[in-house]
Image 1 (tube, one colour):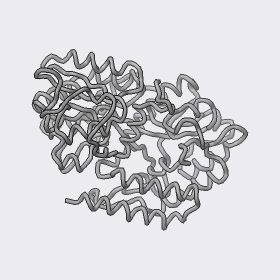
Image 2 (cartoon, rainbow, N blue to C red):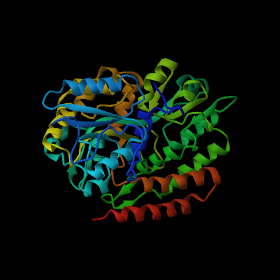
Image 3 (cartoon, rainbow, N blue to C red):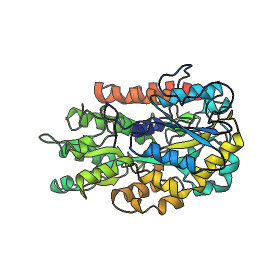
Image 4 (cartoon, rainbow, N blue to C red):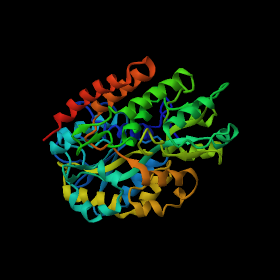
Length: 426
């Protein structure tokens, strides 16, 4: 896996950012490669052609694969713009300007852009086939009853552990979050930590608590912020206990989404994305297993799921041609979708029939990921915005690292997040 200078795969990073439903700031100028497209209305994929945008994937072979795929499409000429650097603001700049992009991948479909008319409505091509897609993948592309994207890949995040380490300590697979924390403390010793949940001490994984403890991060039809609950406060307090007892790995050169520290034996249990399964299996053989984030309080297990989606610009040079190309690639061509999901790291094809037929995902921890995502998958959706994510994460870090009162800190963060959510009310 190719990584950025800070050790982070760009594909992985942007997948994580997508879980936060990142809304890109509006930037009027972008450096580096923005696709080489100029102004004017519509796309610029050549004379009468289409301009299709992809961010710079870290994994070798992705760029060649999507360019070959574009070249094989004969109904329109497609020029792939392989965008270096900060993809989201460059894309947002072009969408706002209404030029230079026809089709584009996006992991951060947002309410404001949809309502501003920047996305083409894909409901007509998705409605006949939407039953083939997982519910979590459809949730992130649906706003105000319209479908604005075709799900490309789904990225579940789970708990991974070393079975040999748990067996040696006489510990069974944790069934509750309290069990998970207790196991992490018990498995800490020498140079090994029990838990590796990220350099923030595990604030990110706690986001699962709101989803697992009932109601989700948002409730009441995405009109109410729902994370200031007793179960979430309890989970954060438990996590602080694990940090206080130095059972949580901190200060790793790479963050939780890179499995390097786990593969090196620095922790017995980690929170990780399914994309890292090939590297973990390569490093650890059959001494790696997966499980959903266990139940918090009275809730149930949960698997947070992010992903990427193919969209069409509302101001594309030829919206119908762009929609036809998006459909051909991400609905009809299941062979390429399968390759895209397993040849460059592991991801789940959002079409359930394609996922079930993908043999590489049919055994070992990959199968556990697919099964757990099917049973416990959760996506916050486009109404969970970056501002809400920041309010939650800041509160979690204060509780975990500074000992702030969990209940009052969560309530203050929820009030902040609710103001943002209220601003989206129609």
